[in-house]
Image 1: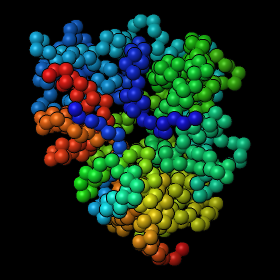
Image 2: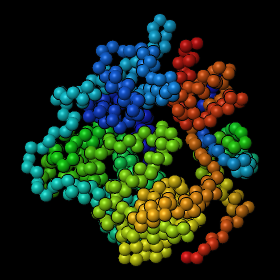
Image 3: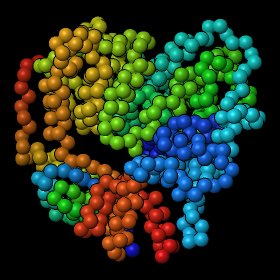
Image 4: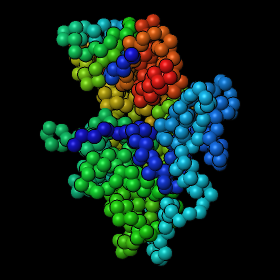
Length: 493
Length: 71
C-alpha cells in the first residue's frame, strides 16, 4: 500500500474536489472549524464582512477595503478562499463587472454556527447519563498524553537509543500499521522497524500538527480502501465536529450515525476520545481532539520565512507543553549544553532521550541523566534524516536547563553558547549542498506579454519560486491555479 | 502555447552544479532544463539518486574532516 506521506491539512483539503466541499459545508461545525483554522486573518475579515450581505458584491468594492500596498496579501487570501471553495467569483465579461459572493452552503452553515439554531446536532449531543466521578480533566489529560506518547515512542524506538518499553506495549496494531503505511517508519530488510525522514519531521512538529498528520494518513488509508465502508468526507466532518466539543463533558454515542460509531475504536487508539469500560454509550473528547482546530500553525505553508522562523521557536515551546509536564517525568528545562559541544540532559523520558539521540552522540546514561556530544557526524546524521539546524537549535533552546537561563541572565549572554549555534549552522551548510523545491517549470510562452502576465499572476498568489525574464521561463510550486488562469486568458482572447 | 513540466528545482553553488551537469552527461537522464549558473530543473524521480551520486562524488574528492576532540 503506498500513499502520500505526511500531508498537511491544507494540502489535503486543497486536493479535494468541489463537490466534497459542498458536502463538508453542510455541517455548521465543519464550516466553523475550517473558517477558524484554515484562513489567514485578512480572509476571515472578508468572510465576516460578506457573511450577511444579501447580494454579491463587485470585486472593485472589495479592492476598496484593502490598502493598495496590501494587494499581494489580498490576492493570496482570495486564492485561499477560492481553493477552499468558500467564495465564488464570476467570470470576467465586458457587460458586467466581476462579482464575488460566499458559496451558499458555506454562508448558510457559518451563519447557523454563529447564531445558533437549527437541529443539525453538528456540535454533538451531550450524554444524559451520570458521569463517573473519576473521569475529570486531569484524568483525560493523562490518558491522552499516555496514548500519544505511545505513538511517538513507537516512531522513535528504532533510533540509536532503545527504549525501555517491552515489545507488548506501545500503540495498537492498527496504529502501527498506519504509521508504516504512512512511511513514518518502514520495515528494514532485517525485519526490524526504522524511522524515516518523514518520521523525523513528524516528531519535531507541534503536537497538534502531529495529530493532524496521523488523522490525515488514516483518512487516506481508509479512503483508498473501499471495503471499509467509511466515507472520508463524513469522517473529516466528524473530526471537525469532535474539535468543537467541550473538554471534560460526556457525549452520547447513540446520537452518532453508525459509520461514525465505527470510527470510535480507532479514535480511542489515537487517544482522541475516551470511552469508559462500563459505560459504552458515552464518550469523552480529550484535549487532543478539542484542540484540533486551534493553533495558528496551519498557515505555515504560505507564511513568509521570517514568520516561520519565529513560529518555529514558539512551536518548540508549545510541543514542550504537551510532551513535557509530568507523565513520563520529562521536565521543561533539562538540557545543558557547553561550549565544548558536550551535552547533558537531566531526563528519564525515553522519548526525549530518543529525540536527543537524533542529533547528538549519547555515550553515557545514568539513572536520571544522559551525557553526550554534538559532533559533525551526529549533526550530519540528523540532517540526512531531514532535520534542519534551526530545528535542532530551537529544540535545544526550548529545552535549555534552568541553570543555562540563570547563567545567561547573569552574564548577559544568549542562552545557548553562540559557538555551538554557529557551528551547528556551519555543519548544516557543509552538508546541505543543494536546495530542492518540487513544482513545475513553465516555458514556451508565445510572447512577452503572455509570459509577464502569467509570471506576475503566480507571484501574486504566492507560488512563484524563480523566474528569468530573458528566457521567458519561471518555476512555480503549484500549477492548478496557473492552469485556470491560462485557460481563462485564452477564452478572453 | 506555454507548457508546464513537472520537476524539482535545485539551487546550489556553481561548483556543485557543475558536478550535477557532469553526472548528467553520462546518460542525460537527470536534467530537464539547465536554467543558470546556480539552478537546474531535474526529474522528480531522479532526485534521490542524484543526491546519492553527488554525495559519492564529493566523498571521492574531499576526504571527510577528522573528528577532533576527546569523548
